[in-house]
Image (cartoon, rainbow, N blue to C red; front, side, top):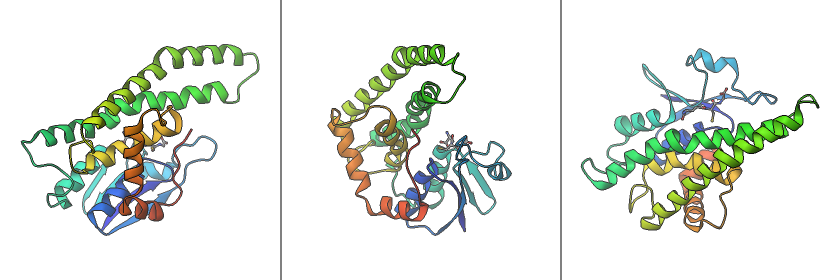
Length: 223
Ligand SMILES: N[C@@H](CCC(=O)N[C@@H](CS)C(=O)NCC(=O)O)C(=O)O
């Protein structure tokens, strides 16, 4: 039996969605974020030393890192589904977006979350003005321009094809869902980028996406 070690409001939602798309049986082992720190509970470190979610267990395989989990599930249980054939331009794009999601798209979005919290979070009153100035400069000078450039780029790509790899929905769309949802929640993605908004509406309308939400429980992107 496949087991997903699933943290509320986290990237492991993508793994549930892929499992629903593939119609596979699985169990969920649930973990709750600490309400103050938002970190995963120490119990997750008993499953994988880094204590992050998702972690997948399938027989004697225990695997972390959502991109690796997606590649593993597609290879082991996909039977050719949700991945374009090798040697095609679609496959090259599939691989690219599968890596882009965590390698390029997420870092500035995580920085946005951290620096927003520095700006708003509790701290001694005498440090607050300085912390706000520094956070504001890093956001304006580095984080926000990077997010905007990435969103413009993705928007332009989606003008050329309906799904990330090409004409067909693939697991690359599943992997890209977290950064796009995170950009909508915290990075300024809105109707000014209509292709991205349309892509979001299309993934939200998929039956397996909805089923994964029902099984996974609470899912909202941290802001
Ligand atoms: N690149 C990793 C990131 C894993 C990660 O940072 N997961 C977050 C949830 S979205 C987490 O476990 N956060 C809780 C913590 O760091 O304690 C992946 O794609 O799986």
